[in-house]
Image 1: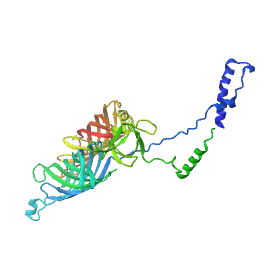
Image 2 (image 1 turned 180 degrees about the horizontal axis):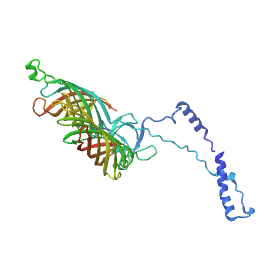
Image 3 (image 1 turned 120 degrees about the vertical axis):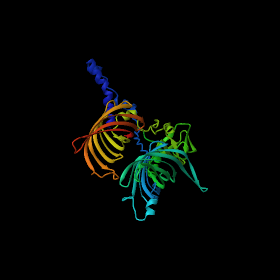
Image 4 (image 1 turned 45 degrees about the vertical axis):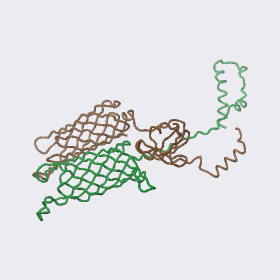
Length: 220
Length: 250
């Protein structure tokens, strides 16, 4: 109804303009056949579609935990465990932050000397921020029926290691393998060297602390 | 109003009864139509993974998720695979327009609101690792907060700072900036040496730096800061710091 009134008014508008413009006499005014004209104008029957585009789920973050064995130079090998989080910047490149913890064992000197202990606090904790580069992507075939996507990566970065209640600036580098069990669940196998300088045993030296671990991560 | 032909009306009513929410149902996944001759589906999100299926021009695919520059899509016959971003850019939206993704650009870099980054460098001869976050009031002025771990030969310190930074020409891909701020530093000496007590001092800093737009939502940054430590002793300490790092903006 409203539409029709609008059409009527619109069709009258030029007449009104003509009236105003020429100040013509009432005899010049032609009464429009408004009904007929309104019928000629086709009302659009298309309803506007409102298109809502659903957001795409980005899965660039990876978070998980790991456990393995870490060898502390001069202090034996012990279990290590920790957590890691990664952000995948590009297909090949990711940045990872990790925190890990292990405990120092006894040096050979301590073992031989009986009750002598070099350290008060044997906790060994580290954190690091590293860049990883994925290379050799491929598939791992398990049996006849299963194929899993995988990739090797090289990784390296900087961080800090707290050992004997002291923080030491630490470089880390290593190699890892990532196997994607599903799109969102990955299994990692990592070997990493943590290098830092310490004067714990009398003189300054760079120590290499090797770690091997197995971990799980979730993509989200 | 022209009346509908009766059979159309009946059909519509029937359909409406059978699938009542067909028209209103909100799609869970974004759907695009292939405009390239073929859309290649890889087994994994990377160029090294083999192509195992192709979708022809005109067919529709649903976008399930995205990882870096790869999109997991589902075809009409329910196959799922990964498609590269370059190919996704040559698909059509339901509106008929080309598909576009908001992946960050130099324009967005010039007017971003948030920034999170990590840096490493030298703090008066010691190594420093830091993280920072910034909130930009306007394209050239920001509030920055940061935390640093300083790892020296004789002591370790934790440094927390807050300050403002001013970027001179935000729209340039490389732009200088100046910084001014304050904070606290907590210094703990290494235990193998003599054991003076830990101390916490207030600091103030002034600095210059530069930021570089890399790509997408990434930027690099270098900073030089001159710190003044207000110690409890007679002299204040001055410390120079150099850092380089990268950041994400959004």
